[in-house]
Amino acid sequence: MTNNTLFDVQQEQQESTHTNKPLIMVVDDNVELLEELENLLTLGGYSVIAVSDGTKVMEEALRKRPDLLLLDLKMSPKSGFQIADEARNSSLLKNIPVIAMTGFFTDKQHFLMMKLCGIKTSILKPFRPLNLITKIEFALGNRLEEYESSDGT
Image (cartoon, rainbow, N blue to C red; front, side, top):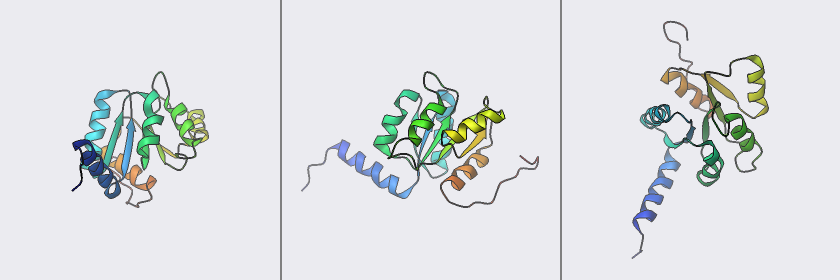
C-alpha cells in the first residue's frame, strides 16, 4: 500500500495529462485575455499553464517544460522579447516553439526582433480562435489545413 498524499495524486494526474495532451504555457499580463485563452485552449484539447507575471515565466517553464510558449510581447516589467530570448538561450528550453501575440509590434523591425529572439511565428491581436489553434498545431508539428474565413483572414 502506498502512502500518496492528495498533492502526489494531483501531481501524477497532471503529469499523466501532460503526456496525453500538448502543454501550452500562455503568458499575458491581461488577466481577462489570459482566462479566455486558457478556456479556449483547454476546450481545444490542450493542457494549459497560464502565467500573468512575466518575471515568473522562466521558473515555471523550467519546472513544467511546456511543449509550446504562447507569449504576449508587450508586458511589463519583463517584455515578451526578453522572455523569448531567455528561453532561446536556455539549454532546456531552446527547442520549445514560441508564438508571439501582439497588437502593438507590427513594423518590419519588430518582426526582425522576434526572429532574433527565437520567435518562430506571431499572431496579431485580435485574432480568431481557429487561426490561433492552426498556428499552434503547425508550431507543434501537426498539420492542419490553413483556415480562411469568408473575408479572407
